[in-house]
Length: 254
Ligand code: ADE
Image (cartoon, rainbow, N blue to C red; front, side):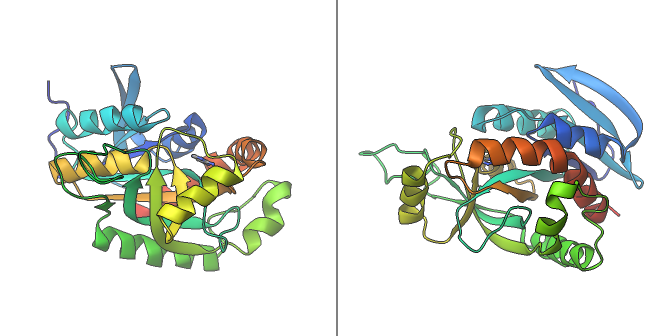
């Protein structure tokens, strides 16, 4: 079954239903396809063919979703938007991280291969598409300078978001919500240049690498991956996530 064969089709994934709901508001000519416990929203944003889907949480959920986007919907580019926990101390809640290198921090097939190395691939990380990274950086920097990302922000976040920055940096993914200082410090020990942590990016990156699909991941910092993370995360998702994902996609697909 091939559902999409048109020229350029961008897959858009998010790990929170709130984010998907926001992006859906941008789409026209929408049709829905239910496949393997996911709903794929096919349509257009500004005349570009897109397929939008809520991936659910974790590496397996994300990997299986992007595989369907590639094989059934024939996407030739992938954008993942979502939230992440800060690892680098210079990040604040609301900052944006465009992922550069992606590590699977829970991959460990020792003693056969080195910790974090991906079996059979002989590498320990995947890289997002350089052209997509630079394009997104310019567009998001411009959007922040012109206050376009957080129009009508929830009052709790108005001042936080006034100092928002966009960064390009490394991301680690694993099937774990990081919410304690010991785990956070351990990640820094292994990945000194890490910017943030989430649960899907490096799995999506592996599938895109294996199918040669250019991808980009854009994460907004929702928490500090510390003991306050569960509260900060829930609050951020409730008040900010849907708007920010929508506005990021609006900036990128013009
Ligand atoms: N996504 C958002 N915050 C996170 C955290 N602290 N750990 C893992 N994934 C996250």
